Each structure stands twice: as structure tokens, then as C-alpha cells.
Image 1 (cartoon, rainbow, N blue to C red):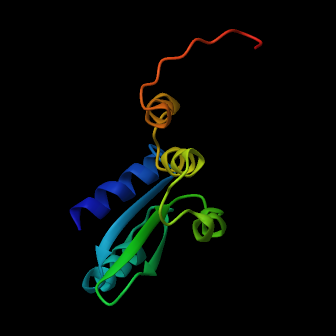
Image 2 (cartoon, helix red, strand yellow; image 1 turned 90 degrees about the vertical axis):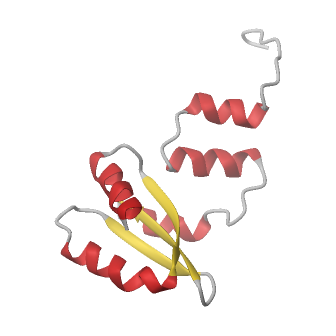
Amino acid sequence: MAQIVEHAQMIDKGVKPLSILAIKNKEVDSINEFFSTNDCPIHFKIEYLDNSWSTLYIFKNVLMYRLIPHLPPRPLTPSDHTLLRLLCGYSIDPILEFITKGDKFEFINGA
């Protein structure tokens, strides 16, 4: 539960727009209770994966409800990784480094 509280605080402070966490289904009741008694203006969504595990999404902007169903479940392409990493608060430089895997290339302005 400490990890969920920490992520909720990061969302509340604007450190990141979205947190995505794997949780055990037996934790769902305590998570519901935590968010219902919390004074922070943050939201959450739980997607059940199977009988044991779920995905917890924590966010502040209510429009994320509309975006979450369209997130790639298994990011495969550079654009999948970019979207998820930006939403989860990574800066652009590490994302570009991950996508290019450190490839060196010559850049010419305007070309």
C-alpha cells in the first residue's frame, strides 16, 4: 500500500500525469477505501486482468478515463513506448535514448 500512496502523492503534486501499477486483487478493497477517504483530487481506475491480478491507474486529469482504454497493453512500437513514457512522467531525452537505443547519427538542419 505504501507504493500506491507514494504514486498518489506524485500524481497530486503534478510530478507525473499517470501511474500504472500491478496490484493483487485482494488489495482492491483497501485501495478503494484509501481513495474514498483521501482528500486529494485524484482519480483511479482498476482493470481486472485475471483471478489474481489487476492494473491500477492513478491520475488527476479526469480525461484520462477516455485515454486509458486505448493505451497499448504491450508496447511494441517506438510510438507505443513514447506515449506510455510521456504519460508516466519521463522526460523526452530518456525516451528518445530508449527508442534509438543509443544509435549515433549525423543530423543536418533542414534535411
